[in-house]
Image (cartoon, rainbow, N blue to C red; front, side):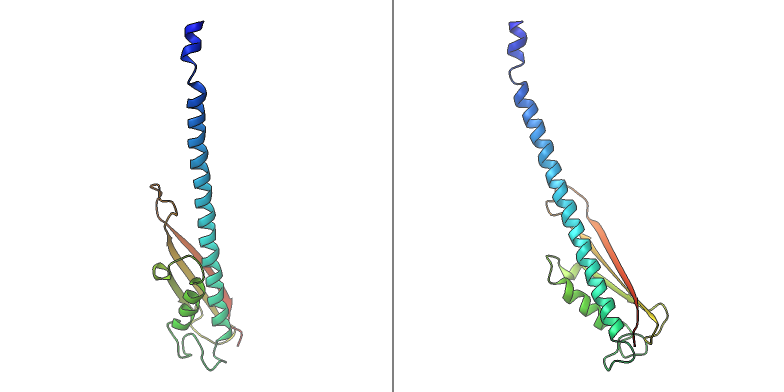
Length: 143
């Protein structure tokens, strides 16, 4: 029995090390998930801000945005989206903003859709892959 006790001395240390490694990886994974949800939240809010701008700046506005209103590409909407996203920790240079008008008009009650995508780089790295996070918003032009 004495020989068995000598062999079991380091068991608690090994179990502790394995537990700590698992806990650290779990905590880092949870932080990555929180950062990815934050990224999605920023993109969704940016898309909503772009839709709000496009809804308010329809054909009834002097600086209209949309097809037939002076800004057919939606450049003003894209600028609003990227300016809003700049207040976060994200690089807007990697962000892709698409503005579309499904009804091909900037008059009420036509629709506007803003889609934002961003290649999420993991905060800690650790060999985790880059994931493209996408968010979209849609609304009807008010006037």
